[in-house]
Amino acid sequence: MFSRLLTSALAIAAAASTVSAEAPPGYSGYRVLWADTFDGPAGSAVNQNNWNIITNLKVNNEWQDYTTSNQNLQVSGGATVQIVPRKNPSTGQWTSARIESKYTFTPPAGTVTMGEARLRFGDNAINNKQGIWPAFWLLGDSVRSRGVAWPACGEIDVMETVNGQLTGHGTIHCDAYPGGACNEPTGIGGTVGVPDQSWHTWRVVWDRRASSWTGETLTWYLDGNRFHQVSGATVGKQDVWTALAASPVYFILNVAVGGDWPGAPNSATQDGYGSMMEVAYVAHYLAA
Image: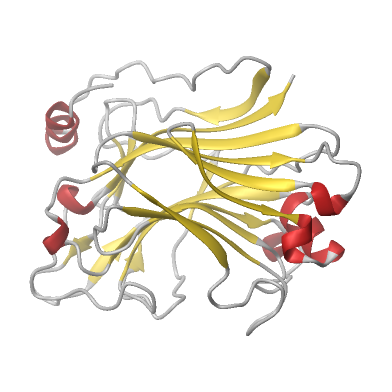
């Protein structure tokens, strides 16, 4: 993986050269069913055969407008994609980007499925990231294919962090709002300390080998170390667990600004590459 300095330089210069993408790692006993490694020239768009670029969406009282501009979303030329929040110096309006995979998958019964991304955060100081909210997560495809409302569609947050804090959050949202099986809007979550803002691997694992749905699990990992787990028994409702663990889902990458959880950005909040989320790959694995 290139150094942070070179990656940023490539992005800023929009160099025309293309660097070979970092392949998702191989894991013994697993095969890759789908991946995006974000290869391409600097300043180019993500592969729109793989991703929907989302606009005209505001949730959670967030401040940003999502755009398709390469000022907010670009392949870096260094085999990564960069999602960059920016503030208009004249109007104060924030913009950013959100992409959702066109690819969907259903974790099959009797085996193990993994969803994984390798990512880093920009180098701005923590004190300069108030209101910045990067995330790698999944939603149940029923929300876009059948109009099932959130949170009944199911949501699995593999990684969220707010305000530059070196704390990663892994969470499920489900069932009904407010309250319900997942205690909405809080969800059922766990946290992990993040060593630094550099490259780390975030993973969620669906283990559906148990003889009963109550014994099936979702488990979160940072750099291969487990930090959170929920089971069917934790949720306690089979139809709700099915929406989370046995129904089609899709990947989402985004950087929000402001909103109910992080709160508003303040006068110290900085935009640009220093507040971005940069992703080397997203991959779906299945036990062989």
